[in-house]
Amino acid sequence: MRELEYAKAIREALYQEMEIDDQIICFGEDVALYGGLWGSTKGLQKKFGSARVFDTPISEAGIVGMGVGAALMGMKPVVELQFTGLITVAMDPIVNTAAKARYINNGSMNVPIVIRSITMSANNVYMGQSLEAWFAHVPGLKVVVPSNSHDVKGLMTTAINDPDPVVFFEHEGLYKSVGEVPEERYEIPFGKAAILKEGSDVTIVAWSKMLEEVEIAATRLESENISVEIIDPRTLVPLDFDAIVKSVEKTGRLVIAHEAVKVGGFGGEIAARFSESEASKFLKSSIVRVGNKGAPVPYSSDLSKYVVPSAKDVELAVKTTMGVTKGDL
Image (cartoon, rainbow, N blue to C red; front, side):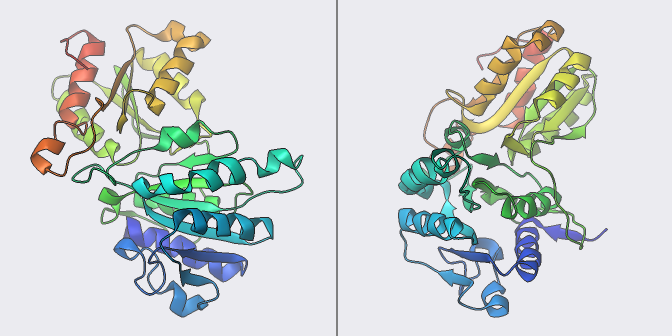
């Protein structure tokens, strides 16, 4: 199978869907003339015209507000807000309008909008934020966190055709990553996790770029005869909780890793849901979480490594839940 960069896989999904459905429009910051950051929308305006692909003023609230209005009128907007630090400016139309339109209209109206936002993990105080837990907290929103080229294309295709608002988090550190991607159109259903690696000793749940660190840690742990099973949920809302339960039923241990701040992070939701369920009986030891310990991501790359979770942190978490070593996590 051919290999494709993460950014190009996004572009291909947009291209294929826009060819099929002329109600799909794409707009936001630098999506048209510039072609999007890392080229994720390059060539779309030339192909589909300036009425369907266009740049907007730098007004995140205005971009989402216009997108919500277009969606309510029957369009399928895909809007780009660039970095996650900028999505905070658009919280009102996302949280108070897009997420609630179906509810306040008794199901007679829906908002099929995709809100693209770029997360980062280093060298930027404002942009280097992972805010997926904020949106997972809001009823009515779906939250997507693709980790590779294959999944980002299939999940984007699904998101565009979903009748409800989708917050689609793309990681800046993944845009140039390469993976196998079919040329034909395909969808990946929301709420269906992927098992990236099978193992028998401990289950690790992680998403987006954090999976790169998890895979590094798993390789090192295998050399110490610790077998790791890796689960990528792909979407946080809806969450494939059954896949996590099935894995922990086998391994008896659970580690959850994400780049977001650990306090209030989505890892805490997974841990709490597991602890409150009957599945807790499968646990042989306490659940361990890995995340940012609670500091803004610094500009300095040397300082960033003390804030952004790494493979070393994942290794320590696994060994802690295995009872091999203890550490301040």
